[in-house]
Length: 96
Image (cartoon, rainbow, N blue to C red):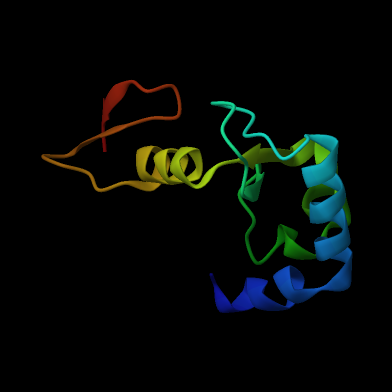
């Protein structure tokens, strides 16, 4: 976790929002149907938008994922590039 995000993720507002979304999705991963673990922000949080509740606390920007699906997302989107190529958000191999 980035230092600029620590205060947000420790906040009561985030915890309440996270717990409510978890219950709304019945604790099930939205991608594979296994038990969910992580309420994932679909919009990548950064130092600029971390203080915007329309992004950070709006459940239209959430997705409940199991650990495996969360890891797959981050490894696919932010994984290591090789020989100047990587997979984009659509799973296509593109030049870096």
